[in-house]
Image 1 (spheres, rainbow, N blue to C red):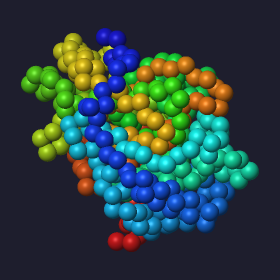
Image 2: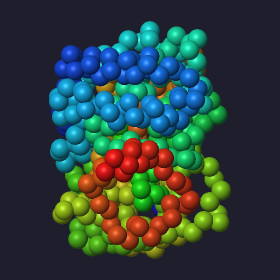
Image 3: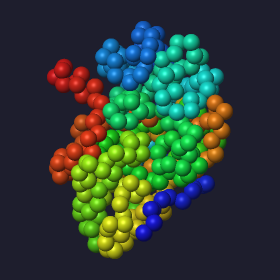
Length: 360
């Protein structure tokens, strides 16, 4: 069976998307608080490299509660079966961004360079404040240097790979970090620049139609899911535990899906038929969200797979630029069987969990 992917979708379906509006005054409050913290700390490489500096984190933890109540309300988890929410709109001017970096390393380096005319660090702080309103932001030691806010930009030489650095290929629908038992509950994407209206595809497992036999088969721990290329490729020595594609949360379906990194060739025909049906259904219910600067996309990573349509990168400093934050919801629990997985040795960077633990 070929790897299942969503076809390119040119038609947008905004009526199917839950949308929440951030009042202009509230958006200004978020930006102003982020700027105040940025000025207080200074954009030094010691702080901006991973964003895990203790002083920065204390500022975020101590002050995110100062934001207007409406900010906390719009940042709650998606409330519909579609499992995704568009949040508009942070005040943002293109001239404050500087040029789009060519990769995440350059983005992190520029954020700590006080001589560059860019507000990237202030926007990192903005994303952390918003993510903290939603839950607990975290990162990965093996991805983007452990940075708590990832930069998603098209990168030369990575156009065809299945990662956020790609461009000219379709980014297959996937659960973010599906390989890991501590993957995010929510994924937040913040749009800084998107001149070509490149669409992010989203599909909810709670909108698909599967028969009882297909659901039962996909609930079995059948195949492993491997880490994606952004974590490297040296996983031959790590145990590869089989995982369940479907799960349940209070009676609602949950999903763990990444066909591009699943060894489907080793599965039997019955499983492949059920998996193929699921992939077809995810394509049928696909919604495309083309974010504009200042908009956020909040994705329920336990319910929704996301991807991206192909586009032609410019590499002229004006390319699409998103910021991404992984968010944990402490109140959510996953299947007990996942606790036995080692996550291929990948470790989370979860400083807010440490702060909360120290204060409890």
